[in-house]
Each structure stands twice: as C-alpha cells, then as structure tokens.
Amino acid sequence: MLSNFFQIFLLISPVFILIILGNILRRVGVPDISFWDVNDKLVYWVLIPSLLFHHMSQIHLSSSMIYSYGVVILSGLFIVTIVSVLMGKLLGYSPESWSSILQGAARHNAFIALAIAGSLFGDEGLAIGAVFMLLYVPSINIVVISIMVSNLKQPGHADTSQGIANIFIELIKNPFILAMIAGLFVSLIESDKLIIVYETSSLLGSAALPIMLLTIGAKIKVRDLALKITPIVISNSLKLIVFPLIAYFVATFLGLSQLEVVVAVIFASVPTAASSHALAKQFGGDEQLMTSIVTTQVALSFITIPVILAFIT
Image (cartoon, rainbow, N blue to C red):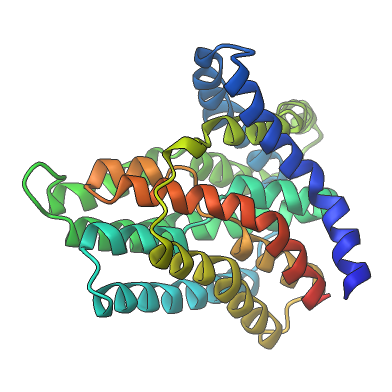
C-alpha cells in the first residue's frame, strides 16, 4: 500500500502543484487580478465545455451505465446529506453553519476530479469522468441547494420558491450540461464530416485542465480562514473519507470495472466545489465557515486522495 501511495502521489502531484502555483501567482500579482476573472469565464464558458463535449461525443452510453453510475452518486449523496443535517442539528448549529457543513460534505470539485482522472488514465478516464459529471452536476446541486434555500429563508435572503426555481433555470443554462448533451447527440452520428468538430473540441479541451487548476488556486484565500474546528472536521471527514468509501463499496457491489470504480472514488474524494462560497453568500449561509472548509479540503486532499486510491487498488 505504501508503494502505491507514493506512486499515486507522484502521478497526481502536478494537479496540486498547479493549484499552488495559481495561488502564488495571484498573491504576487502576476498577472493582475482581472486576469483571473477573465480566465474563470474562459474556463467556464469555453474550455471545460469543449473538453466535456469532446469526450461525451466519443462514448456510447448504455442504460446499465447510467443506472450504475447514478446509484453510486445518489448512495453517497443520501448518506452524507442525512448525516450532515442530523449532526448539525444535534450539535445545535444554526442553519447557516450546517448548510455549509452540508455543502462541504456533499458537493464536488469536478474540475480537480477530471484532472486527476486524466492524469491517471488519460482519455479513457476523462470519458468516464464526463459521464459521472453529467449525472452528478444536476442531482447533487438540486438536492443540496434545495435543502439550503428551504432552511435559509430569512429576511434579506433568497426566497425559497424563487431560489429553487433558479436552480432549474441555472441547470438548463449550464454550459457543462449543454455541452455534454450536445456531445451525446453527436456520439449517435457516425460521420467523417464531423472530424473537424472532434479535433477543434479536442484542441480547446486540452487547454482546459491546466488553466482551470491555476484558476482554482488563484481563488483560494487563506487569510479568510475561520477556525471553527468541529464543523470543519465533520464536513471534511464526510467528504474526504466517508463519501469515497461509500462510492467504493457501492461501485464494487454493482460490479463496475476497476477503472470505473477508481474514477467513481476520485469524484467522491475530491474537495467540495469552489462555487460553494458563492452559494453560501447568495442564500445566506456561513461564508467564513464555507471558505475554511473549501481551503482545508483542498490542502488535505493532497494526502487523502492518494491514501484512498492506494487503499482500493
């Protein structure tokens, strides 16, 4: 296991090195802060959709694949959601605090997951990762954000019904979802005339992961940490240990291939989504706690991901 750990650690270390580099570049102001805002939009609207479109256009989905991947995602989501909410309420945390615990435990930074899957398994890993992303983006966001807006209905915060309606509107407009659906349609068309589409999306997609990792690093603000130890420990334990183990046991039980099992675990074990802070701010959650959870999870996952992967392989 120890040799596996170091091998995996070395293979995925470039992912975290780019995140650290992005943070250093932002701190020294090279390039200036406006660059990262533009970069973020480029990644969100062009590069990642191109990457997802390219890999979805190359894959042939089956009903059994959708069922199995969906069960893996929803099993972990159901358990960590219940535990997050129950522990938050039993320990007397405010809705603002336990909603941040929930986000930290249940949501995923799919960008880091794609980067690690690509580092370990190349195009095949990215293709399987794209399918997981297609299923998890709508399901996890609908569940988590619906719970948040239902429990954070306070003066000055987002209205519950409007907040839930906005979730569906945003999902319909989400460029990742649109790109993956477009890729699925193209995968049904076998034509040499589409080679230019494949090659263009491949070229754009190849730029997505390194630029995206630098941007993730640039967004991390260590100085905003608020050391509320217990809620951070609860959220991080559920996200970095419990969720990956659930994904592993469920995926293995369903008879998925070793590659599919490992990619499922990668998606389950990555830190929570970087957008969690923005959602906490939008719906009236605990912004400082959310920032602390995101930052500590990114730091800890550098160790926990190779440990989990070494354990299951």
